[in-house]
Every structure is written in C-alpha cells, then in structure tokens.
Image (tube, rainbow, N blue to C red; front, side, top):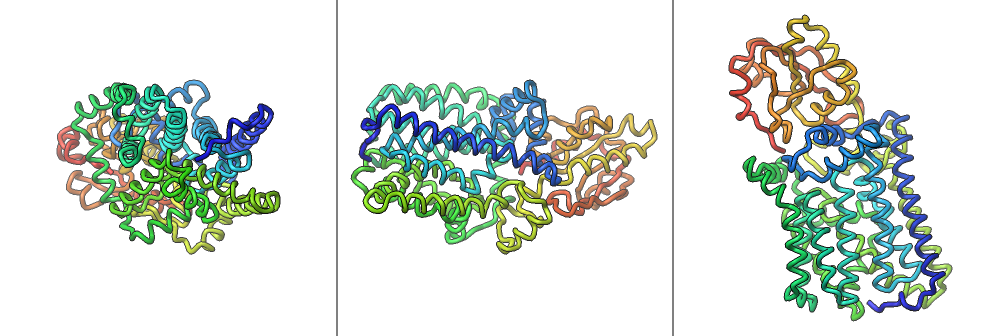
Length: 520
C-alpha cells in the first residue's frame, strides 16, 4: 500500500503518536478501572488466574497446558507488585494498551494518516474478545501483543527490504512459542503466506534462517521439558479439543468472529482483507491476507467454537481496512464521515463492554445478557447464567471458607494427615491461594500440571474431595460422605458442586496416582 509517512511533518507525527498514546492509555485505565469496580460488585479472581498463581510458585521450563513465559512474568509481578487482583492484571492491561498502540503504528507504516491510525487502533480496542483476553491474567494478552509486534516488524522488513530484521522476527517467534504453543499455527500460516507471494524470496536469505535459529534456541528448554515428561502438552491439546470444543458449523464460526470482533468493526477488517488480497497497493503485504484465510479455513475445518483462536490476526486487517476507509473518506465530506465512523465504533464498543468486562453488578449484567439470548457459549459445560469469562470470577473464596469449616471439623489427628483434593485446577488453585489464612494444607489435584506436581505427602487416609463422582470415590475409599453442596448463583464450575469427606483409601495414593491423570 502506498507509503505516505514521508510527507508527514515532525509535528504531525508527534500528534499521531500522542493520539495513539492517549487511546492506549485509556485502554489500560479501562482494564484497571473495571477490575477495581468489579471487586465492589463481587467479581473476584478468574479461576485460571488462581492456577497461574500456583504455577508461578512452581517455576519450571514447562507446564501441561502452557509454556513457561506467562508464569515467569507472573512470578516477577508477585515479587514486585504483590498478588492482588490489580497487581496480577497490570501486565495484561499493559499488553493490551501496547497492542492498541502498535496497531495504529502498523496502519501508519502501510500509509495511513492520523485518522486511519486512530481508526485501526480503536477498532481493535472495542473488539469484545480483545477486552476479554486483556481483562484477566492469561497467556492470551501476550500472544496478541507478540503477534502484532511480529506483524509490525515484518511490514517494515518488506517495506524497506531489510532482511536482517528476520533476527528480530525470530526473537518474537521464540518468545511467542514460549508463551503459547498454538502460536505455531500463526507462524505456519505466515510462512504459507510468504510462499504464496513475492515475499518468498526471503526464504533464500541467510537472515531468515538465522532468525528461525534464534526462535529454535529459545524454545529448546521447553522442548527438553516436554521430552522429560513424555510430551504432556500434546495429550492436553488433543483432549481439550475433544472435551472442550463445541462442534460449530462454518456459519456459526463466521458469526462468532463477527460478534467477538464487534459487528461494527466487521466492515473494517473485511475491507482490510480485500485490500491485502486484491488491491495493487496491498500486494507487498499480501501474505497477511493469505495468512488470515488459512487460519480461518483451519478453524472451520476443526469446527472450533473458540472465537479467540485466530484473533491475533485481526489487528493487521484493521490497519489495512482503516487505510482504505481513510482514503475513501478523503474523497467526500471528510469531517462529517470520519466523525460519524468514530461515533458508530464508540457506540458499538459501549454496547458490548458490559459483556466483556466486569463493569455492571452481576444481577444487572444478567438482565443485560438475557437481551442477547444467552447464546454466547464457547465451551462444553459452559452453563452458567453469565458468560464464562465473568462467571468464573465468583465463588472461589466462599468455596475455600466452606472447605475450611469441613477441615476444622476434623480431629487434630485427622487434620495432621488430611488432604484436600480439587477435581479442577481452579478449585485446587483457590485452596492454595485463599487457604493460607485458614491454615489449610496445599491442595492436590489430578488436573493438568497439578497432576505432575503429584500427591506430595498425602496418604489418602483422610481426603476432602471437591467434586468428583461418588460411585468412583466409593471404589477407592472405605468411607465416603457428602458433607456439603456448594451453592453460588453466578458461578459456573462451583454451582451445586458436592464436597465429600473420604476416609480409608484402600490402595496407597502414590500407587493409584498414575491412573487418575486428567488432562483437559
């Protein structure tokens, strides 16, 4: 796409940077503010956050369901800022802000002016899935940032024909794979895009292969960890695909992409896709169009119900779409059209923010959610009254208080040998985090990386079990009693979950442990 950046004055560039910086700052403050106000409405830690905190206390070169980068970053946060909700969500909010800023810079690099840069960044900022992913601690906010940084560097590399930048690309790919294994799908799609365009010439560059060598060296520790434990992540991804994904039709997948990127932004990314694939100006960067199509086809073929799987590909599309829209606006009533477009985007963002971030009291949100038909389901078992990413912020502390009452009802001798077993990593993580003030023992679990951490010193003579099948428990223990049923109006995982007190494990726990592995 035609480069216009060289006609900007220094003052104009500074003004563009300031505009993008203000939007990025607003984005950061939005995440922090909604986390803060959400606590006043009762929204607490997201279940996965409690698991990540547990992982950060067990630093390793790998985990069953993710590589080591995110827990390591969280370990730094906990050591410096603490483990409050605001502290652990600082980095995801910062990653979101930087991603918004970089999206505007991508638009600038391909030729967009101030309006086009702002439009691209705003389109990303109001995408519900982006707000969801940056609203709590997980790998996903870092994945979006690293992939957008990758796109930014590749565009500069192609634009200036600077093959040495493949070294930086390799670094970003390596960090991305240390953050999330599924980034490999993005990498493969980009390489396919390179093959399908004149940019394939870079496969003959030594800098390209040196960059890939850097990426390979970075992921060696995680590969060695996978080998040591028998490639548990491969088993996890296979089972998660079967047990979590809701089989979705191609139409449903496309509709979900439109909803989770925000319906008002659909024309922007569709125009951007057209620009990369068919416009003469978009030819140098056509690999991004092919890359997106490949990702979408793979998602449709897999019948995936998770709309976040290919979201990191959208910022580059927003940038191209914003450029073409800006050029169209310049031919008509620029001020009226540009103001109208921004107003529509802001309105669309305001409509969907309550479904993305904890900004409304849960009772009010429930009524608002019902206006959308309560049809936003992305995983099997997602049967809460609220969307999964908000429902899983309720009930954890109350659950641990209930478990503490059961534990304290035991005799001192039973407490000394008692264990707490969580059927999910969220339950176990909650016990480890909130249980400290009740002096509870650390939880054990057979779910994902908790399984690899093993049963510790637990003998199985006395076990408080969160969830589970009573018939299966009676085959293992001599005495099984359901002592309480957890209740929580807005929960998902903890709703009507039984708690059992089990005594007299008939086979030593360490002997049965290998047979109860649960990767999902």
